[in-house]
Length: 166
Image (cartoon, rainbow, N blue to C red; front, top):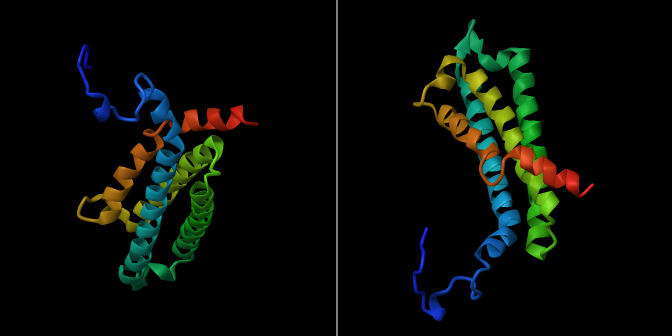
């Protein structure tokens, strides 16, 4: 906290004294969209790495992709990631036009970060024990994903913002 600190008028951020909180609040939809961008990027990276890993890693005389469950899990992750990208792209278009609403930005932040958690969990699982070792990128991506559901406003708060607009 800064108390009784003099600031020259030309150095005042935002140009209007006492409005910092309100100025910050106006940027929350963009911040939430940025969190969504990180979520989708992480999903795309994790899925690509996991597909490559499953094609290379052998078990019971062949690659992990010989197992139907592995292929189905990869298909689920790829589908969720593709849908997430389409939703994010739509939100980005709205943002660039100046039309992204508070509630849709909240939807993006909540749904994309929740989906990121689901996809990263599957990717870690498909890596087996290696998925939990920091030497593998997917382990670090999984650990980093958890905070996405907290900062920028928790996902529970995002649901409240969405519900208020119903």
